[in-house]
Image 1 (cartoon, protein in one colour):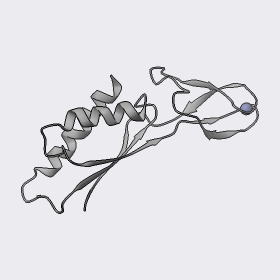
Image 2 (spheres, protein in one colour):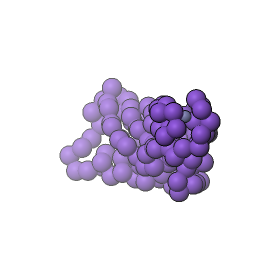
Image 3 (cartoon, rainbow, N blue to C red):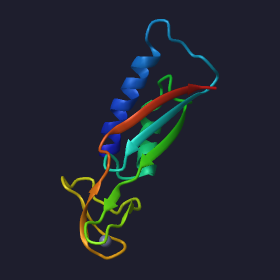
Image 4 (cartoon, helix red, strand yellow):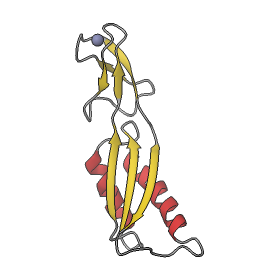
Length: 124
Ligand SMILES: [Zn+2]
């Protein structure tokens, strides 16, 4: 469960930030802007679900999650094509993920983030 492990760390970090002395709510609703690499999670839906489950009963329960999954990109050495790959195209378990170039079909290594790229807290 990639999403679960990842979100557990993310939420622990946010809760630590929010419970620092002198840091209180600065608005009605907290929006959590989270950017994660596509190689860190399987799907956006599973990531959102993990967030919902893990924030239950915490001060983050009613927060809004603004989730951005940074796409995996392929850079083909055969034809020079460069571009993002659709969700689910690459198996995040692989150490060196490969994918077929959508242009010429050559198998090329893909690049992508494996962890959390950014966490931003916004009060509204
Ligand atoms: Zn190609």
